[in-house]
Image: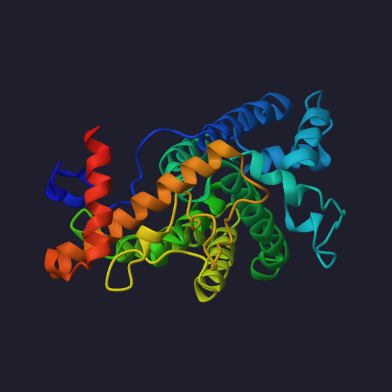
Length: 328
């Protein structure tokens, strides 16, 4: 097999919003769907951003009022649950960690499922299942806390409902503005610019819809913005410390990273996403294969830029031996 016959020589590695669905993405899909329908059954409402339902929670005396209060107590976060300066303050801080489990409306739940399906798969390919779930939980909790504090200050005469995973999904997209391949396109646009504009547009649209709404109960206008800011800050910190890969351009170093994005075992410069503990024999074998493939990719990239004559004798010998092994 010649060098030019190999798939990874003909086309550079790409980051895709497609591919097989991992366990982390599947888990999020189940959480989003099951969480919403459980809340609907308990709260007896399809929407939790509804003035009549909120009124039923606070002052209702019908037969369904206890169930509505239970759903509110479990999942519906507002400023009055965190910020002591809000009227009718009742401390319920646990909802900072549970509000992300339920989307506020049926339409929001459908959009969240679509977002998890595409964004979840792309980010699980980078982070792995466990770290994907951890990132969603952390971004949801941080943005929920900030929104619960800020929303009553921005809109003191309204009730801002803070729920759902949509803010965390926007946060998950944010690192792609820095690590997405520079040479990759989305609908003929540069991928990084396209994603950045999409994030800004969705954050702005969410805030605009909340502000112009005539209803007394609105969906949080600030939670998505806080999730994006938290993800951007953390991404810049990791990039500064050299713990995320560069994709595309002269500084492209994807070839020295494994998937998920951590360097093969034995490298001096580790990654924030490096596996912990001693790997077993199978993991070591996979790591060796990844390291070897990474070296081949780097050499083939060198050939594509400078020609085969740029290789040293040891590099040629390595490619020849690798090619012979593939023929067996």
